[in-house]
Image 1 (cartoon, one colour):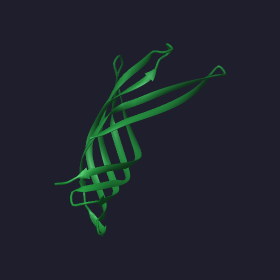
Image 2 (cartoon, one colour):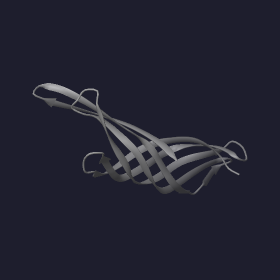
Image 3 (cartoon, one colour):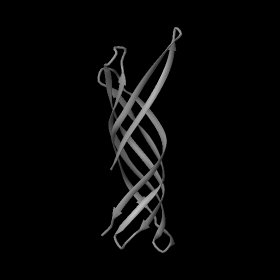
Image 4 (tube, helix red, strand yellow):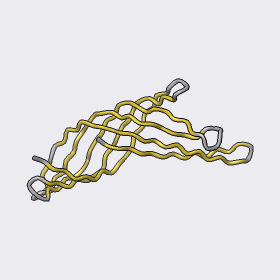
Length: 133
């Protein structure tokens, strides 16, 4: 289970005046992952993997009224390609890190209008710790 936060800024020019609008995304993203560990030496592994899951969150963006923001719900499916490495510091404790590619597809649903579909591809860097039994 992952937490996501995104921020986008757009600048528009209207009648010679520039306006900047910032939207933020906030929510949760979860995957079921399948990894294959390839031993590189002693306790160090390359762990390529693939996963599928979904996400749910909210997007806030400004309106024409200063200080007032609108909110949309975000939801949909996601796929992930993991190209990370893993180091076992002990018999049960491990450290992991590496690049990921995340494909998200879903819908943005404002509270007062029709929703619209979207798809995005993102590159990420993941760092974590783990404990195995």
